[in-house]
Length: 210
Ligand code: SF4
Image (cartoon, rainbow, N blue to C red; front, side):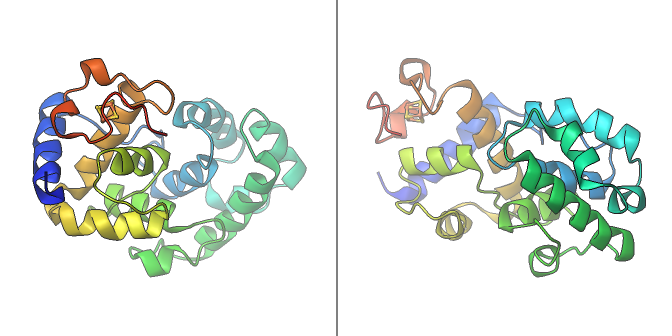
């Protein structure tokens, strides 16, 4: 099946399966907190991030306060998530930037913030500014490859491939839904191909490809 047809099927099926899919990170509607939470989510589950951020916001309710934090104090609050030392450093430096500047609404502007790469920038442009965006996290990467929507392994190239296949108006929800399907069915280990609604178009069905 051609990639375009696979993409059409996947878009329509995911919409049926997960009409209400949304960003799983909690940020209280405060855009700068989403930036921090997304930085924290690298190589860590969103639920693990959501467990540490309430205490972080309690101690540092504004970016100005987080900007002035001692790194060791922030590390204590983050110690249950991976790479917490680096992340403490990044979020303090990101908070300094955000305390002094209006949050950029473009990818090129957002990646100027310390610790912000394309993944975080795409999360923010989509979730906060409603701009078409493809967020390539671990789930989007894995499922795009398994479904044959991309043969690339680099997130940047997968993003480019998906942008060609997914209409702009569908991109934000497509990523939320693909992530949800990755968590629920097409898991990294032992994907549940036998109950997967995408199996009819999936070249990896039953193979359990990584
Ligand atoms: S058929 Fe299997 S490999 Fe393909 S999307 Fe579904 S769970 Fe993933």
